[in-house]
Image 1 (spheres, helix red, strand yellow):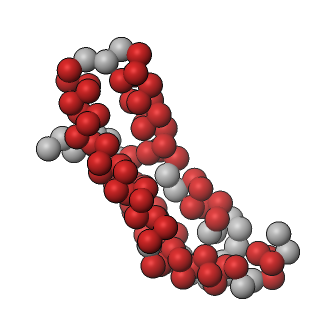
Image 2 (spheres, rainbow, N blue to C red):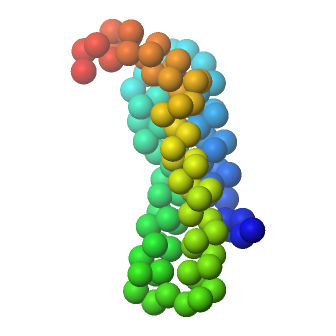
Amino acid sequence: MVQPRGPSLAQSRARIEEIAAGPPPLTWESLPSALDRGTDALDLATVVVSHLESVMTSPELRGAWNETQPQVAEFYSSLPLHTGLWNALQSYAATQEAQAL
């Protein structure tokens, strides 16, 4: 199995764990905005490789893309089911800041 190169997937996983376990106070910057930025490197890598695969593919690139795509999809699909993130978002939703949005 091909492992995604570079730190994008590992960084994104680690960042999500940090955000979910983040200490109070929960603010827009420390939770929703941080969550949005937490996958930036993986988002960029995925978009670039997807584009390259679309416009100038090769058997090697296609194979690597096909092997890494399930790992990336698993990561993204795990986010809505992440108990720590859910709890943090629930806590944030109860704050005055969130209710004022």
